[in-house]
Length: 99
Image (cartoon, rainbow, N blue to C red; front, side):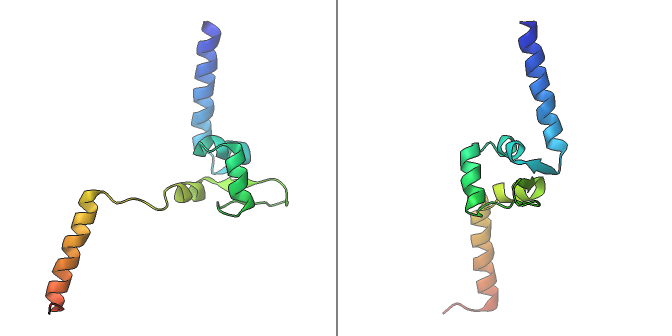
């Protein structure tokens, strides 16, 4: 029981340390993003995810670029959509584009 607790705490510490790095290895990037290694490999092979290969073999990832990639295609909330629609209508009304 004590061993399991120590292992859990060690895993927690490792995850915290991973969050402080700016450049991640392939395995670290898979852990950080939650993507499977096979899917991450497919993404890198197809150049669908930002990565670097400084020596032509090892793959590295910028944590900041991964964050940007993970947060792309943001879905607006209903409140944001309504605000944009209201802004559009007000802008058109001020511009006098009504028929």
